[in-house]
Image 1 (spheres, rainbow over the protein chains, first blue to last red):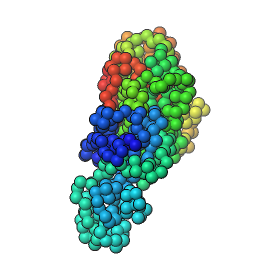
Image 2 (spheres, rainbow over the protein chains, first blue to last red):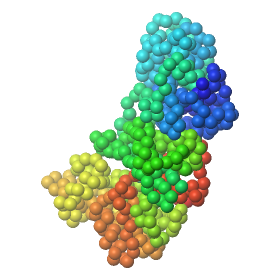
Image 3 (cartoon, helix red, strand yellow):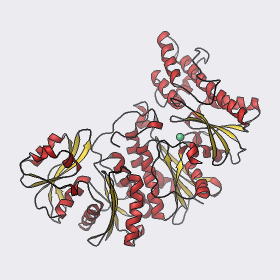
Image 4 (cartoon, chains in turn blue, green):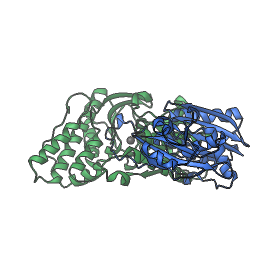
Length: 240
Length: 333
Ligand SMILES: [Zn+2]
């Protein structure tokens, strides 16, 4: 099975190609906030390196959020475009479960607390455990909350690994938490390679691939209803 | 060459297929007006979300309506890359790149303003250059001298509000709803355009515009005369806007030796602007190019047509092309 991973829901943007259980190529960039400028060339690059065409893909895994609104739309629109052109199946994974998958794949045995920075003083968070096929299963419903609220999600569980850019930003709050270990900075963002691998495993386990029209972004926050009168000077949504 | 055009710069989700000879094979526009009406203006994040949900079915419809096609169904994909709302532009741009990459056809980014210029080419097959184009919409008010395709000279633009924005703000103040342009146009028919002498900022000097003082003047007049008829206020406001727009376009045409005045953009749907432009051009012995209603509003046929020309004259855009929310017309040529 050949799966393309498309990641652009946080500050990290890139693509990876997963073939028969292995990452064949991965290209990503962090911190530039140039999601659209980076993503399409990254896809062309991983395809070129792997010697694979889009027509040979079995599926595309894409991060549907939560994260940066504008960023995640770049990834979801790109995935929809390829799927619409070629009829390729899509599998949407959330940023939180992709973060958790990286920790579990890296050998962490206990529960994982994935925390994505939601800006404006909030985080998106959920706790995950290892499912039967090694993929993450949610132990708590993903929520948007104040950083102080993360503690309640740990709920006395021991040996919880906290990771994600939200965990990095609010590390002081988590450091005092009994039973919580902070991941090192390597897992601060969901990665395209983990995403592609997670998508491949989901499909192998029988998850039905989605058509372009059926894939939906998960914002986990209502739209900021402010009118933009001066469009020439527009900067887009508040988190962009 | 068959080109798929995609437009998502503001509040219309649109896709169209234009064939050889600039023939419009299909043009689908999904308007978000209902979505933004309760806010009285375009809410950027709502627009971005709606584009992402609607674009796939809109493209499906445009491709199906364009008639039988091989694989790939088009020879190129064009998308608006600016100016506009960045969170909206990026949806169309990303989707367009992905389609082009998957079909292995060229992709080209199109300046939305240049798209509006091509809209008149879809209405009028032959144009006699040079032309003065008055592009007036909710986001733009510019006066451009078009010497030929791709050869533009910016003569002037608004220093504050766009003309369409002034319509929206005044309509909101008068309680006429959103979008303001059609609402004021409708109400003004029963009013006296000379009832109030609203200011005509910079009417007789230069090619730049200013509309922010006009809204303030409307508010002040209504405060002073609370019993004034809404119809008269709307008609006088419309009269003031159209008077300035036409006077400036007319003078620009005279000083540049233009063969005609071409209207473009959403405000070009205004009935008074259309009739006054035709009258002025008839008096001056130049052509009045008034667009069809479908070509006034944002659509993707104009983007596909501009993209077709851009591809032939500048080649495809790189995969790394980003959205340019502040793109100006000069940068297109
Ligand atoms: Zn427009």
